[in-house]
Length: 394
Image (tube, rainbow, N blue to C red):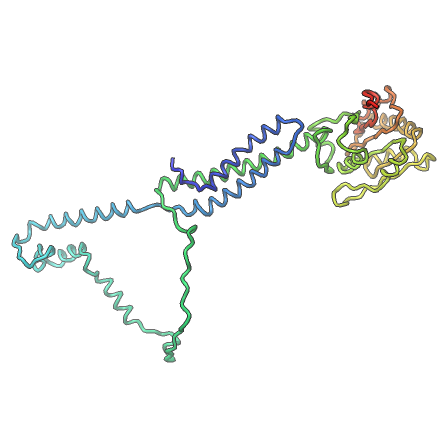
């Protein structure tokens, strides 16, 4: 194999896209998942850039080396000349004089016009008649330019025309016809493979993102995507327990729900935390797409049905800082969810019931919520359950 078919840049592009499957395999094997799939996508982009550079600055400069063909043509011409001399040798007088040169071997005075024309075709020193006529026409050509008509004789001095310097990168690269064809095919195959690898890398990133979105320890960069897309890849557990060593603070957990395009009702017995949570949230970075978070007082100025309908259509979120009101609201939600399940209704975006109260949710109520939430799109997020199951050491 001729290793000069590609430049160093071209071979680097091949090495980059060959590393992509290895990164995908490591990404699938490592836990928790990291950023190797994005590194593979970046390598694919770099490979495409380098492959384009190799194609335009190296492969396009390859030309067929015709030196051997020219040499063969000259050799055939010389053989034809010798054959003509040998053919005429028997028809001329075999008399040589001391002052004769090589061309005087033939007595051209005794040849007719056809023979003279044939023999002169092999003479390199004889200028063809058509070329003499062309020179004569060029010498007699009349200058019809405006400068010649007005008799201008001024010449431009002091400014010499600049001859463009040839860049070494634009000089042709000579190879055989077979090698040029192989280089073109290898270049086209390299570009096609990189395009396929880039498509696979992008598909891998999307599938991996959706697969990790419902996994607490692996999800990243929340986006307001339809919950059905995410739940199709990884079904959500309708009752989830916040780990004893969580990834985020509780307020950041609430912001993550909002960034995912989901609504929530935050039930807590901590007044200070409730005050911090009852602020405007945003679904997109840079404070774009604001969502109101309303504090629900214990006076029932906002009834439970209104809170439920607002959550159902994902029009806002709520904060409840009264344990009694939270228990009553959760019981009412179970009644309304039973009605919605009977009609096979389901929310477009998941609704989270965030339970941050010292008193745990009764087991019977939790089981009912698990059955109803799975069918309707509600989820119960227990914040202190891990402390009850595995008490922290004081």
